[in-house]
Amino acid sequence: MKVGDNVLVMTPTTHYWLGRVIEMDLWSITLDDAAWIPQIGRHHEVLASGLPDESTEIEPHPSGMLTSVPRAGSVVILWPHPLWRTAK
Image: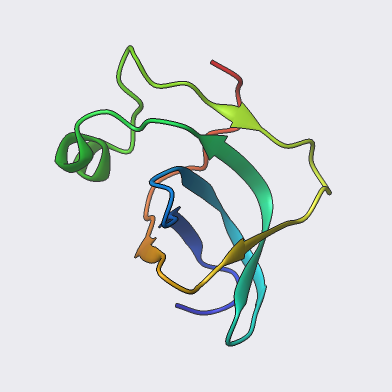
């Protein structure tokens, strides 16, 4: 993972964040164009397709609003798909 990569982050509370890495350190990852996703649906299907299923809620932050996500206990997955920027 490096600055500029799109990532899907599953936090210890099992909520998800999707965004572009703009900064990271030992404690956190800062995302731009981030969206909070409370439940992602069938994990393997979403990872393969890059598309939300019908039950997925997407809460994008406004462009330019940075989001800091904790690294401790989180799982970070490189996201090779377009970011989800539309509320659903």
